[in-house]
Image 1 (tube, helix red, strand yellow):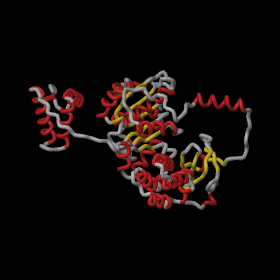
Image 2 (cartoon, rainbow, N blue to C red):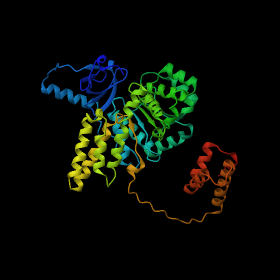
Image 3 (tube, rainbow, N blue to C red):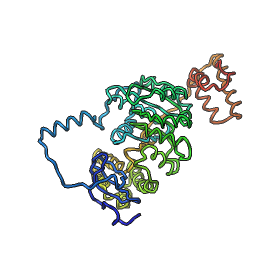
Image 4 (cartoon, rainbow, N blue to C red):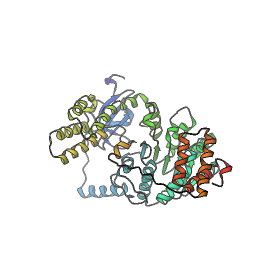
Length: 446
């Protein structure tokens, strides 16, 4: 790092972000003339020196009525970020945690988010909630939306959108993508609600054509985005190319925190290259998270050790301790230690956890929900139900298992178990899967 004398700003100095006019405070000085800035909008962002200006003392005064009029116009033009206008616009029973990504997305000034929930928690539903929210805020008309996913998930996405949200999306192949690009114009007359595979879009000829046309989409969603984490591959180039075409951008994956931190960096670099352009700065930002996550995990314990929590909080790095959210969290934990009323204690711990989440520099661009955080206390009882199969059902069942054993070359494997589960769940659904993927013509009758 260069010496502080060579930097234009110092710690605790008030600055203004040029492109958004947000006022913030410098809370960290980073390599390459970059700063960690705490903004009043409850976010911490790494900013380059050229993107900041010093806050001046000049103040302009206007008449109160003029201020109220301007304030009203601003609110009408920019709907509230903490109110969802599409709450009931689906046939899905949604959980409270599934609205978290939408709230973060709306508070993010660039409308970008990486959804990294664990498997089975409904990332597809969370992305669709964001889509419906954007649609509601655009008076029910969102002209261009693109879903990008592995080829094997295209039909699943199309079905989910239609059955759960009554949204019709077209499946796109190479020919249809090229036709769209051929007829594209910058006005909203060229409309598209499409689902396309990563494999199709990463073709070099299509990437070249996208780069030439530069189509703009109101929303792009990329499922299984970890396929784009390698900067040496075409999929990574595709991720960057799509970011440049997207007014709003969502990446979805269940695996980034299980990979190396460099993999997570490259995903966030795709999502917001302006904020995540230096891996050394990213690692600096990532380091305090282990302290934050340790305390959050402890606070979630019903029999938490307050003394140990306070010792962990006291061991936080100095740059975190200067943050107002840290001070708020520390005070709430201290209050919970000394209050006897259970409801008051729980409220303090919830508020402390919320403040700690805000300390995370990635709070508005990254969402990670774990099963243990939302499924505690769930009681599951397994019950065996004997079902008598008809002769044709028995035939389908045994032929499907024989097919799986031949294909997998083993009597017992996870693949066999999955086949058994599919058939037990719905023979009709299993038939549809076979027809869609065209596994083997011998089983077309199933």
